[in-house]
Image (cartoon, rainbow, N blue to C red; front, side, top):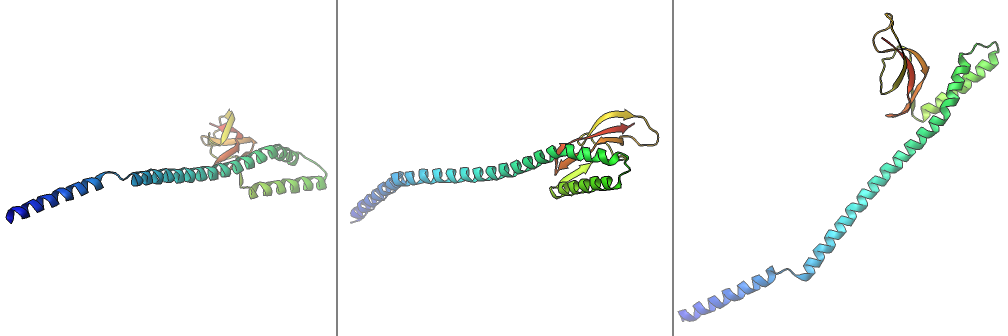
Length: 168
């Protein structure tokens, strides 16, 4: 009887081992499922990256379009500024030019345009284009002595560099 029990236990161990070996073998359906799931996850990640990239491009194109429109209006600003600096005896004419200039500056402000480059500001090569240099004891080092053309920027993007004369 002990021998019979020993034989039965050995047979049971062998059957159990074979059953475990069969389940260890990769089920073809499970393999196909894992491959399809992996492909699906990759596709979802690709789509998410595409969506994020498209949003960035859309925002950048709006900013670039706005900067181009502002750049095309800068000659009007320059002409109005020159007209304001001219002496005239016609008060109505001067008032009309001032009102036009104020309206243009208001439009620029509403678009997020910042006007920079004033006498006395510190020279910044990232914002200013130094076309002349002057030695002056009255002004400090790297100080703007004269502004020939104002600079404009939208956010961090410079639309036009300020053309200036730098002291010392």
